[in-house]
Image (cartoon, rainbow over all chains, first blue to last red; front, side, top):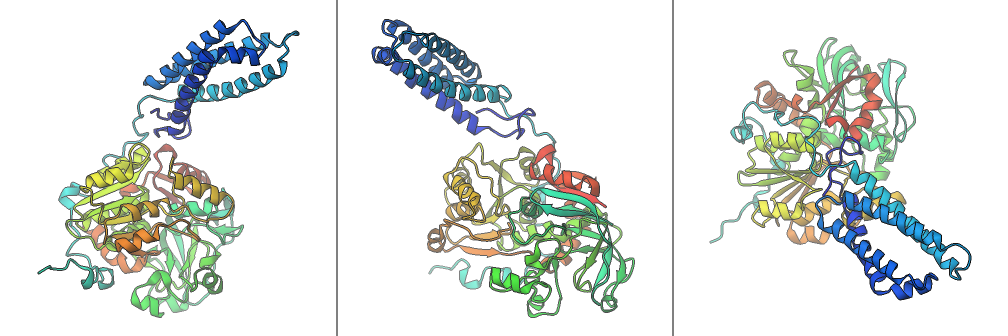
Length: 182
Length: 390
């Protein structure tokens, strides 16, 4: 769990949304990696990249390692930045396939769009995590001495009883009070 | 005079407006020495309460010195008297006032017809709180016209400070009534949702009324600190499961008494019902977000009491009423019958058993008022309670 700081909107609050996004990206990474590792032949065919199965499998291993890193580490920030770097590599590799001669240019375009979308999410997640803290910050102000009571709460327990009037219509009706069982 | 004026959603300005005048024989005018921004003012700031109009003066927690008295209020007030003004305007003569049900006074809401259409019957007039409750000018201003002033005031001694007395106008009696509604028994666990100003007062009230265990649920670290200082065990709903922790702290039985000090703008996160409420509210299919009510009904011990000082304004969806009925829960709610409690509470302050000023975190002038609405709404800078010195 990461916690918000002065650099984010809600200082001191846990940021469960970004935490969930990071985990989601971790699982996505593993899923994509497995697809690349075991479906390299189909992928290269769809993208017109036959003969580059080994490269795609290597990218798959990279994705799986990054995904495990995100899910297993206490602080996923460096691993998410790792995903951003991997996205850049993926985009560069796909871009080289846009040159003339690739019969699957349309699929390459779709793949670039999809990777760009995930890259935007990765950057958002990495930037947010980088501004946050692994441990909650101390409250911005210390109110731990603001009891409003002259003695400890334990010593003041019941202190008003006897000196204030509780109207009858605010008391539990007799019929609803504990009933003595015979 | 200067006053904080509502111009629209999230648009409050410090404007120059005409001084108030005596309009009715029972009126009085007070020079406001201190006033405060209430959590329920934020419902107006965010415009979740219907019935606001451009130009309305805000504020229903005020105190000051009487500077003018109408002819029919002179038997009760004189110029120079120091008074706290309760947020509910009361006639003191109708059947409801005579029963002590001041917040449903039958006479003081001058827009009775609108209120009756919305609620079935009228409720009392309120200062600075929509035209549903009379459209009266509020007290976040240099001067305040107090209608029915011979009944609508609490005389206070000059030996105590404004800060000690101001909250007799609303949050202290509201937290107190919330606890009294629970009819607290010595072995009771009282769970309080919301560690804002009313929640803080409810915690101290429950302690003073002898609750064995008080638990407070919120997510703002500074507020949870203050709740612990007042004797509560705290649950941060962003890092812990409220239901699990409450059951753990009550050996699986649930708290006997549950108090909702949150109301219609619950900020539940990562729960399905909260997302559902957000979506419905966005398309105007629901007015309020009742996550706290649902949680209270679910976790409360069978036979227990739900006390609801938190403000609700309209229509609530997906309330598990079957659970409430089958568990035999008692519901107690309502705006606060301020004058019913202020005698006892003033005495507690005078006796030194409580000093309500503990809750003040920011004190500013009227000009800073609009900015403080935002700071308070966003819970920035450790803001829990803002006092304004006009």
